[in-house]
Image (cartoon, rainbow, N blue to C red):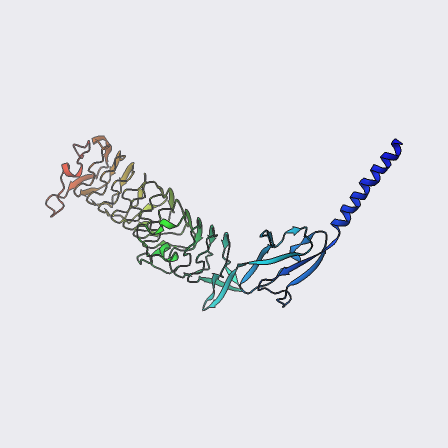
Length: 408
């Protein structure tokens, strides 16, 4: 009797398993709504009879300026274009598309832009398309692409249209061969830099709605033009290519959250206000600077700099309020401008290698300076610009509120 019951139980289990197997292998009907796309040139809905699982990559409709990203069912569930699913009988799937990069022929190659609905996240623009270089990012190319977090623009690109990154509020990192409108922009021309790319007017606070944190300028660039990154309060890290020779006026002015930037060895010229008010920035200078502008490093986080032979003056307010610790004035320097080192409260060492004329307040409020802080070579000494109209300097004014009571 017990054996009969066991046999009945086994037969029941086998029957259930067989039923499940038959159900799993049953043929079901699935309808694909192409939603404006086509398969083999036809825009008609596609009906497939499926047994078991369905690989959605078996049907990849095409649509002008778009790419299939997946399908939604009638309950709103989304399935990626390459998903494998177990369909139900009578299931209806509707195609979902996203924009793609498109290319337009221009004189020297192709211009790139994104079609409506583009949803790229980590975007890399190719150097070539159809055997020719991609030389331009079109005007408003990625406008409104809120999904994009990183963007790499190749060295082949020579022009970027206004507003190419307009509305790209999620963009955090960008690699580019130049900053602004054109690779040919001279350093002294204000092309509004990144503000041009974002379609904005520039100035000290234009970037408040954007979150760009990291910028890499490739070795293709030789200059950073005037105002290139001015007022980008979100910017934290800057990587400059090894061929940069000059930083333009206001290039990084008021980048108040800039944490780190390294000036390559070939960089020898820094424009006026270039790093003004970058108080958090650790600024590393690899080369010997031979040209400076007024306010170049005022209120910045720079702690050390090497000045090259050939520089003749330190302009007015050049290092005002900076974090500079020491300075060596090469023998070519003949003057230090008004307030050039004023309020450099961490400055503890000054080395002088020539006769240097000090303008008013040159080292005033450098509270850590004392007589022992000043070091003179055999030909080094200070002179004072007494009698110069509007800029009279004496020992007292040049070293006001310091511990210096004698100058050599």
